[in-house]
Image (cartoon, rainbow, N blue to C red; front, side, top):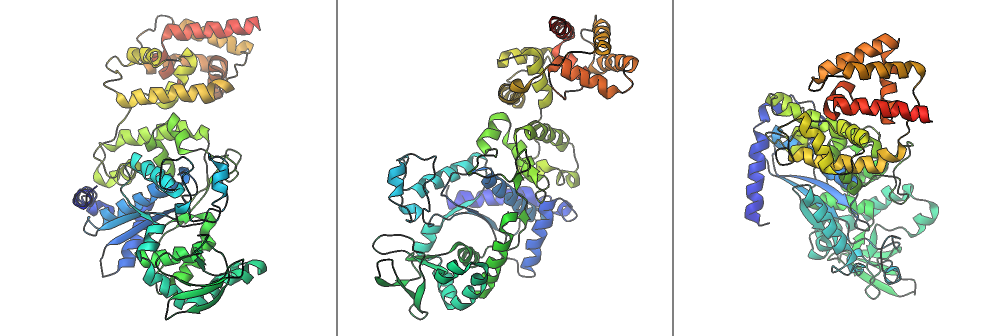
Length: 539
């Protein structure tokens, strides 16, 4: 993308978001609260603003990467709206690709080859997939493709390029001048053994190219060099500039904030102490720590912290097999400071919540739009795609019909909504595919039909009789009959609906039953009741 195109995109985004300036001033959504921190930081001297997210390319992009970039983009958009699009903004996606390869990930090919490069900068480790200049280049390309696929607007930056180009030289020299202050901040956070060898600078060995974690035996602030000894006892004097050395990650984070003038960066709750230490170092070398907040981490279905190494989480790719990226963005938008369970069962709820918000969005007044998650997810788009049938309803339709093909599901949908086709409802068509996949992988393996009690059998037979001749009736009319049967046989209606779901659909929860019957079909529902009762009798 050319600079001219980027500038045009920036102007268009500024105009689109800036149109909400009047209404943004009183907006309460959390991205606006975060954006106000940045405005307060600027004071009376408006200037361009830098937002940043960081990425470690020793592995592939994951759901946390998506969440951090999505949330930071939401804050950036809120800032643009609050300032009327008059202040330039940048979002830097920074790759820490000068880090040394500490271990060989077990899921990569060419393990033996990678083992020969332990300790080398990731941009100097050959690509085990054989497609790029280095392992880091491969993963950086994956990161950029990943971010591009979601339409994020960002500027990619490589640590290796920034170090070697001299972009960080001034901040690196400032760190060298403040060496004692940096050590005073870092040493109390380390164990005794680590304290004995710690240095904020990691020289790159001129012969082996290893990123060396060694004590510094001398430093020359005027010359901008450090002196150190390798394991073989050979002594070297290395410049801290030009990519001949890099910083440990906490001082590196502080140096980067200073060199790039970062105004806003968020981080996970597990990095609270790291943010605190890096902020102190940033001040020590003459910089100003960015604004931001610490978001809560995701938990698995058992309430345990999600870990990439344990594989107990849900990946972006897995989510997108079953739902839209907008539903994932909604999950990231909601309550970022609250720990949330991230596993497959949350997907249907997130999908239907997103389309519920999308259904209201187009007709809302501007002051309501900016409080709607869709505004933050879409970047203030005028409208958002909606669907006429909820995802949960589609899942139940697949469950009842045992559909395996999209055409079967569309047969039911077309009868319920005659004007709906895959061509006229492309968003629904995507949802149909997601529903079939989700049902196959998660609902079908756990379906358990329970036998009906005598009371439930009597109620189901009566419901079947009441449904006779109701073809073409509205969902409301059918629901009235469902309620009438329930009230006649059950002191608590919840017991009646539980019976419908457990006996007929083989699951604990289900849809509004009248709407389901209208979609699935009256006669099909009567057949389902008959088959369930016959199954009970046979058992």
